Length: 91
Image 1 (tube, rainbow, N blue to C red):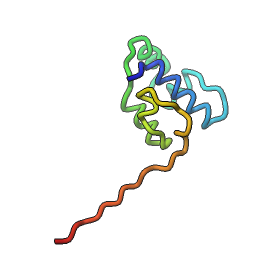
Image 2: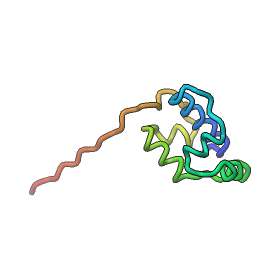
Image 3: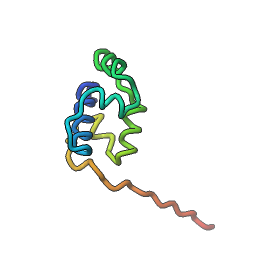
Image 4: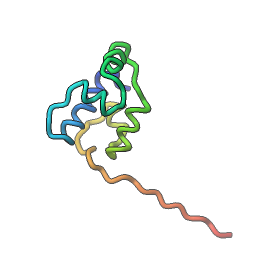
């Protein structure tokens, strides 16, 4: 599993692709819903805000495995969400 600095850099890469501009730590903190001071503290302590990262992945249709594990970030933007169809078995 990646450390939080690596995950933060991948999140910045994704946000840069979405917004087409340079993304700073304060922008990342805003998107994750935490304060910039809290983000800096989490980086120092290597504490990953899993809920915020997973919420980000859901909102932007990104596979969480690319952020949390050593997977490339490319081809994760605007991926079509998988829709499961449930069928009830009639007996």
